[in-house]
Image 1: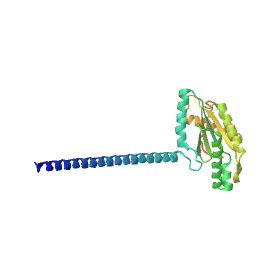
Image 2: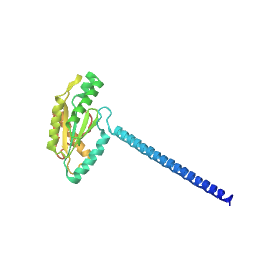
Image 3: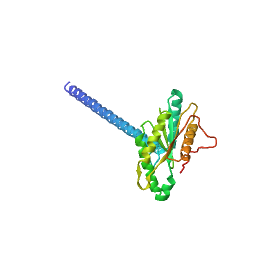
Image 4: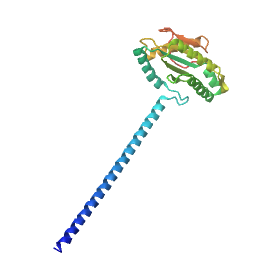
Length: 236
């Protein structure tokens, strides 16, 4: 008995030590695994955030004019298509303004294309500051721009165009001095497509050019001359 009892106590102590050691080891393992899992979550979240930021950057580049910072034609097609569908469904008014710089070729010829670029940038800033956040201003190409005005009737759109015309005319443009623009305005009518609305508005811009420039012309519903084929190409 004197021999067996100490051995039993020693065995129990060793067994208890092993159990405690195993518990500590398991706790450490679980803690490590949990920490690793947390690190993986953080890495995955950062990875998703990086992908989202990259996607946003690519989208901005794909829909933005690099010179003026305005939206480009790709963005215009998407937004105008959406606004046409909304106007058709809910009966909301929708107006479109097309404008370009009068005699812009003379600015480039006289002062160089860098001066012409500065005119485009300053003009874009003037118009951007004068419109609503819900309006869409697009550089169509060259010296031509398009302005989409949701929830805006024809009379209001003409007033907007006239205010913009005056603001541009009254601004100084560095070497170019005074710059003027001609404006065409039209409103959505039932059955319009992107092409038909743009063509009718461009027809009004054509008439503004023909009637002396630095003016606003309004295209009434379905107004389209069969002898004119609008193309939204830059005009002097």
